Image 1: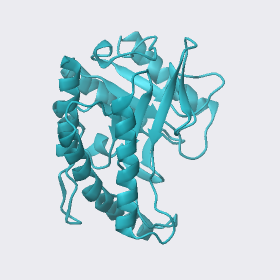
Image 2: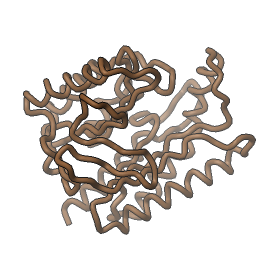
Image 3: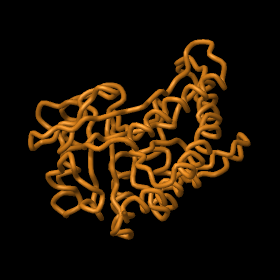
Image 4: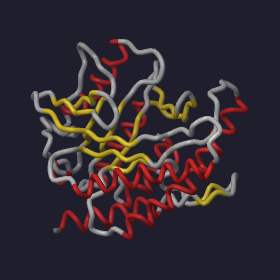
Length: 272
């Protein structure tokens, strides 16, 4: 979600295809409880604008709500998706074995919430190792999610980073070895050593903490993909995409190298 306001044009130019949206009560996009200054509607419209300019690309958008939820909110999301569908901008009737070249110029939505009346084409049941994707046409696909996002208690920083790299590596290996229609989402994003105190001090700390973790995880992702060129990776979710250096904190987040290496790798696989 962070990239929508800061660097989405650059990332689409580089071939990035994934956005993680967190709409809340007002359908604003949040990271946790921190508002990122852009609404769900504005964010989707910006992505559509980019897709019109880059007709060979697609956008995978995962949606979940932070905080209270209601049918009215689900309806707002559903109505926006149906409006885009009427313009030919949404992948229709996706199946577990769908490929990116079938989605060019379109959005593929995956919902992480459950609604009785306003479900999208693909819904995630659970969000972890033993999850699945449920399609409107009744089909299902295994879903593997690596989303270790917070350290344990007093865990030392580099102990956490090494543990995070370990679970990412496992997910990469599972994706590379997969021969079925399992969908993989591998998160490099995380934070370390924070308690959830609702204060401005916490938010300022959180911003730098995410950046510090990104400065250690994103270069590792870029190097890992380069060393394992030609292997399937699944979808990689990262913080500070499109931003190489966060000057305020002095962190080198390498948010361009990692997506570029992933896109090069996936382009190579698609040619094979």
